[in-house]
Image 1 (tube, rainbow, N blue to C red):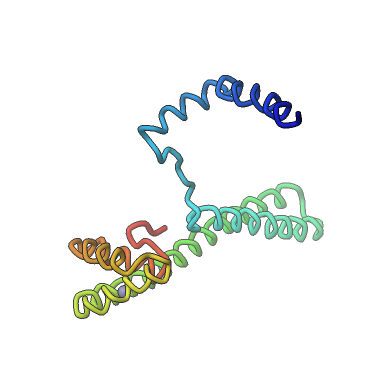
Image 2 (image 1 turned 30 degrees about the vertical axis):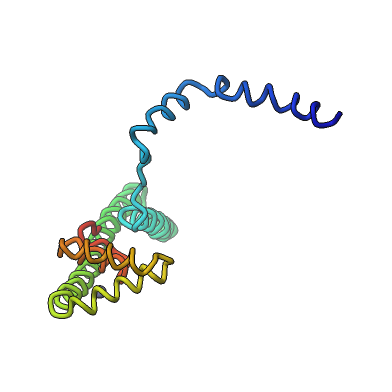
Length: 177
Ligand SMILES: [Zn+2]
């Protein structure tokens, strides 16, 4: 008695489900057959977000402190506004310079490590090949599959270097900030 009732309860839902989907969902599902990866990721590797938030907070705090200090000293309105604007400009320049220097230092460090890896791949290709195979095996890939994959990859030295750098340094040296 209970199972036909349960069936009846589920039946209309299952039948209604495809028709209940709104038009955009159905058309994107159709498109998905031809284009399985249709989403795009935002840049999460640092880039602009961290310095932008840091700069905005830094600018707010220092400028409010600056204006409060000058205002508390009993100066006239025009001097206070001028001080605020000067503080804003100084803050923007210092943030830009700081960001430029820190990003260049980081990129120089990556470049020198990439060079080290490139030299290693040129002088010790067999050990590097085994190293990469071991990394994929640690991730659960079968030995023969990992070996075949790494051998095929090694036909393209620049791509091999890129994979080594990604696996060992966690960055893509073709896509630095
Ligand atoms: Zn390596």
